Length: 337
Length: 229
Image (cartoon, rainbow over all chains, first blue to last red; front, top):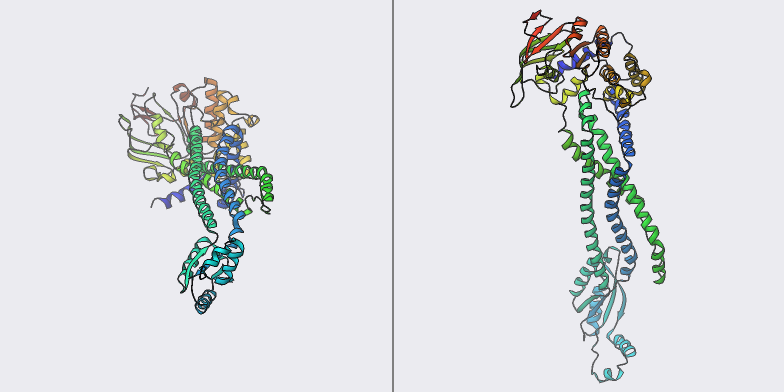
């Protein structure tokens, strides 16, 4: 309620001693945007200058942040490359559907038709019981033993492949196999590449682990930046008191510290990116040789443009948040007196 | 400009620093605030600069009641005054120019305007040739003049000085006081706290004198109960 009159008085007061003087278009004329455009670069440059003047301390903070960001980044790249390298393998995933042994021809046909009628699979091959027996005989060399049997012990087999890409994931394959087993006349559906499933489970586990590690290290970055900014605030306690006495708003005092945190995070992320690029360059040769030995065209990938952007954003964001937390707590405690 | 009405100030756990203090410093006047150390001079200046809050009573600065001023308006009020400290309170990691320009930076002045005004203030205190130096390379008197330039650069209507000549020899003290008189002549209300009685007498300006937290001499009202030292 006291605000309005105060403001009016302040205007009168400002005008009075300066009445005679010509007021330029600077200062308080349309001040908001002009001041904002001026104060932010000033604060950012000031923070940059302060970092520059304490190169060792700043470099160490940046390096710690870089390591904390590079670690999950490196694991992420590793994971991505592992997924790329194994990406082609599961496209060969097939499901062998074994029909019940001893089915008559009509029953085999009915079961095969039901399987073929499904949308999610494509029938690649049908092996009748007789064909299977012939094949087994020619490959195994158990001719005589098989002659002794009075009937064919082998079942007919329908080999199917997932119809689309989305049916190719291990879990989808498992579902399909389960449903195939439910069809009349089907004895068993076996996924031929179960080890792919295990690999994917392992990669899934690692991915979860990387996420957890990234969260932990993000918290670490927050603490590092927060602590650096806290020390900075304590070091500049006298300065802050003087500036408060001169009439600086809290936002003005806060700004250089927030920019400081943001810059620490950003530089840390840049250095992390450099570390990752360097690591990739060092590993690219051996990886290519390994791939060549397996006859693969696999290439070790680094961070994509989007991922680089995300890394920088994460660094800057964590730096800003960390300094925000420190500034909120410690600046309030400093009052001239 | 400054109006106190039955003001009391008590620090927690201590005796009363100011007791039932009523005084008035009119617009455009200059006065000395005198008294022994511990008489309450610093406390009064702290109340005016909103470093401390009044315990009881009313304190108005240019008709703004400091008792009901919300915390977030404190910076605004402080920008209406310039404060000169005994120990200068300069920032020693930046140049003389940057020190003096600080209030303008805080107020959001643009570069051209800022440079012009800062140099004008430095010129006024006779330090224009030292604007690029660091404060630590200056003498005590010069540092105090930097402090004064910083206090007036944003042309505040009220100038407060707390023992501005405390560490200076008499000749330098006189120079500094003359600077304050010059600012007063262009319309700034000035209140200078000092224990240097000889200096106040030499200038013949109104005196407000405190003893044990009470006003014992008020030249504006013609009160002098004779107990003032």
